[in-house]
Image 1 (spheres, rainbow, N blue to C red):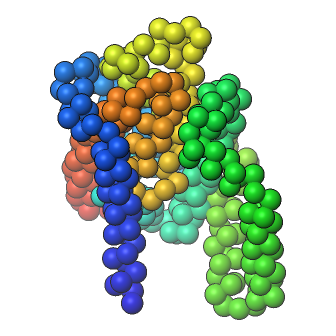
Image 2 (image 1 turned 135 degrees about the horizontal axis):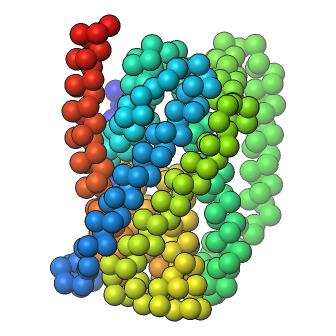
Length: 338
């Protein structure tokens, strides 16, 4: 049974990604997409995107170091922190969330720190990112609501989505389900499995709360801002590489491309909640959907999403190879100097 669960855990995200990619190409003219990729892309801008990807991961690694020190893990060398992020994101291309598990185990073994402590810092790291995504979503809805409403009014899928979100019974059912689960956990609080669950939740909470009390929390805040500015620039600078997104940058009514860049970036960031291999499928679909709000055709949006995703993925593969070499060399050095 455990083998079946493992197979399904890896197979379902892969099949979901494949299904979304199939849906994208079924909906668009594949030959037109390939013609755009071959003849209309200025790849020089994508080299800059690759550099920003590396910078964002370095900042993320340094930021994680503040949490690790506050949790008592010790001082981790900056290069080890950066490589923990490089390796994590490159492994996520193979199996969703595999990279998260690897970086936790890598730092735990390297620093001889309790695994649960490192897990708590990782979860706190992700919760802080989730908060940023929610704030960015609110910002994009505030400044770009007219484009989203026009899409809802124009397409049946948008109207159906609005009906679902506005359904009172949906929210009542959700609230009731949460209440039933909370009540069951309360009455089963002395059960061994429930105790273990509560213990895990306490460790996760401790890893998150430490963000507000640790030394260097303001530096952590500024580093978080730097990470998400880099993420946004990856999307915005990629606009310069394509003629139809470059046209958005010249439109003053769109904030010279800042607004469509924000919405495409936020929609793409939200897609990470869907398990997939490095975002393949959900990210492409989300970005294509966002660009369609500004009149970009399905073929153009698909070409944009595929090229940008491939650019980031190639960067992560290169960083993964570098991490493999670093871990091998630094491991031998630790053995020779225990």
